[in-house]
Image 1 (cartoon, rainbow, N blue to C red):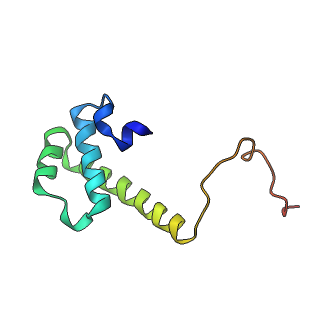
Image 2 (cartoon, rainbow, N blue to C red):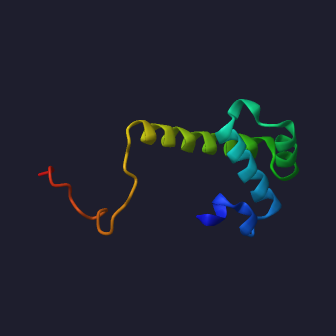
Length: 89
């Protein structure tokens, strides 16, 4: 996880770095992704792939907004995936 927070520490390929930069800029300021970012993307990805990258980034951004708005606890505790909720019969 730390490598995603500081991508300079990870061994990402140039294509992966371009995709991560795009996703970060799309997340922070979707209306202002620079032309230079798209130029770098196009060195590694075709138009269809760029659309898919944008779709995935936007989808996860919407998940985060939904969870933040409803204060959803995303912590998974050991064994909780197999446990049956107390209020279910």
